[in-house]
View 1 (cartoon, rainbow, N blue to C red):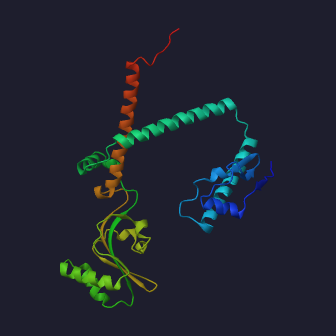
View 2: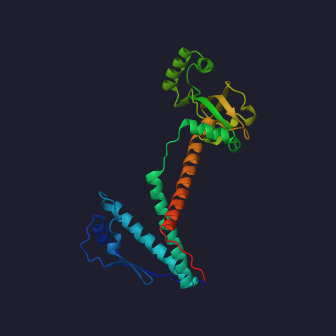
View 3: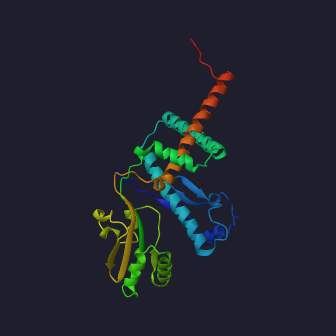
Amino acid sequence: MMYIIRFSIAVLVFSFTAISCNYFSKPENKPIAKAFDKYLYLKDLEGIVPNNTHGNDSISIVKGFIDQWLHEQAIQHQAEQNVKADDKTLQEQLDVYKRSLIRFQYEQELIKQKLDTLVSEKEIAAFYESNKDNFQLKKPILKVSYIKLSKKAPKINMVKKLFTSKDLRDFDLLEKYCFKYSPNFSLMDTTWHYTEELAQTLPISKIGENNYDNLNHIFEISENNTLYLLILRDSKFKDSLSPLAFEKQNIKNLIINQRKLALINEMEKSIFNEAQKNNELEIYHK
């Protein structure tokens, strides 16, 4: 069933300007917008415009707030017209939500005050060793060194030679060259990356997954007027064991989450036992 929705908006430009300047000398009960039988008052707009925001920016913020309010009222009105909620059931649902919200806020405050978020390298390693079956890769990961150059860059053959050299003097020469001629390079990246992450800046797909085990070899890829020199330093394939270094942050988060759950469980037991001890809990028998 279609409903015709009408809005009545009594908002003037000078009202926006007054609000945006944090000037609320007008009566606070003055309505500035109406949606059906609901009104938005000037006092409802206090604090929505950040300090030091003036002119058109502040007017846009106020107008956006009013537009959003009207939008929400329209949706709410339509919902109320089409859903006849039982008052008792609705109140019971609100009570459940209120209890859940209060409990959640209490738990968050407890976590904030008492949770130990320091996780040692030893703990991370032990967790990894005990849960290796849970750290199987779902996608390949790579360590890649690369140099991005213009095809017109000088001495490209020399660059290739320096790139595969293990001599530190050659590395220094290559780094100086890259700072001068390369808009983007990474010569000794020891970080693992998913291939789709690399694909955002490099034509990694042109290497082909069947070549991921071809390490320390230069892949030369041309795109438009750009030359990419890529070396795969290490690789891990799908369904292989994910390296500890790649999983460290994930493991840290898992350990902290376990601590959160343990802290909350301990809190619940302590509160329940204390209530029992003080005879605050009782079951009436017929």
